[in-house]
Length: 329
Ligand SMILES: NC(=O)c1ccc[n+]([C@@H]2O[C@H](COP(=O)([O-])OP(=O)(O)OC[C@H]3O[C@@H](n4cnc5c(N)ncnc54)[C@H](OP(=O)(O)O)[C@@H]3O)[C@@H](O)[C@H]2O)c1
Image 1 (cartoon, protein in one colour):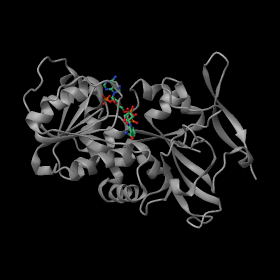
Image 2: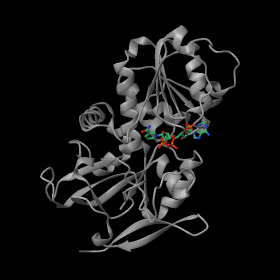
Image 3: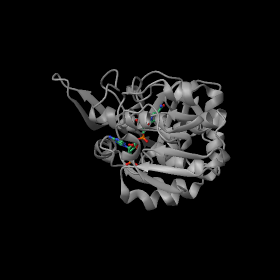
C-alpha cells in the first residue's frame, strides 16, 4: 500500500505540542473496520484549538487531528460499506481520541460514517463539515420549538465564522428575517450576500447589563459565541423564543438569571454534534442538501493544503477565518 501525508501532533517533554507532516502507511493507522482515502477535511474551531494546543481537545499523542473528512472507501470489513463508496464523517471523537482527517487515509468504525449525501461533492460536503452540520442541528432545534419565519426575527452570532455563515444562509433560504451579529464590519457585504437582512456589531449583544431582562427582539437565535453574548441574547428574547446554543468562541461562561426562563418562557437549547445519533445525522444532511444553496456554500469556501493547517488553525482561534476552510488532501 502507498504511503500518504498526514499532519501529526506530537507532545514534547515540556508539554508543548508540535504539528509536522509525516509519511504514514495504512499499517500506522488505528484499528477500525473501514479504510477511507480522504480527499477533503474541514477546518473547524476545535481543530484550531487542537493544533495550537489552546484547548484540551487531544486526548493522547501522537495524534492526527481533523474532526471531519470526506473520501472513498478503499477497504471494508463492514457489510455497511463496500470499496468505492463515497463517505463522510463528522464527530465521534475523531481528531480528538482517534486519528482524524488531516491525512491521506483514515481507518474508522463503519458506524461513524454516513454515505456522501446525493447532490454534494466531497469538497462541498467538507465545505459544510462539522460547522454546517451543527448549524443545521441548530435550525432543526429552533423549528422543533416553534420558531417559524412569521414568529419574528432570528439572530446568528459569530455570523462570519463557519457555523454562523451556514446558519445565516440556511435561515435566509427558509424565509426567516436573519440578523447577523459580527465583530467584523468588513464582512457585512459577505453576510448580506449570504442572506442577512441586517448586520449588528457583536458588542450590541455582549454589552454588560445589570438588568435581568431588556427590550425583546428575537424569536430565535443561533449562538456560536457563548459567554456575555449568550447572556445578552437571553435578556432580549421574545416571549417563548428559543436560543440554539452551540458554541463558545467568545467564552464558556454564562452569567445570567432565571428571569428569561420564568418571565418570558425562553428556551435554551443545547446543540451537540459529536454524538448525534444516526437517524438525526441523516435527517440533518438531507435538510442541508435541500435547504443550503450551493452557490452560497461555494462562496464561503477557501481551499487550502495540509501544510497550511497550522496557519489556519491559529487564524480560526483568533477569529480571523471567514466562512469555511477546506483542506484538500
Ligand atoms: N456544539 C457542537 O457540536 C459544535 C460543533 C461545531 C462547532 N462548535 C462551536 O461553535 C463555535 C464556532 O465554530 P466555527 O467552526 O464556526 O468557528 P469560527 O469559524 O471561528 O467562527 C466563530 C466566530 O465567532 C466570532 N468570534 C470569534 N472570537 C470571538 C470573541 N472573542 N467574541 C465574540 N465573537 C467571537 C467570529 O465571528 P464574527 O467575526 O462574525 O464576529 C468567528 O468567526 C466554536 O465555539 C465551536 O467550538 C460546536
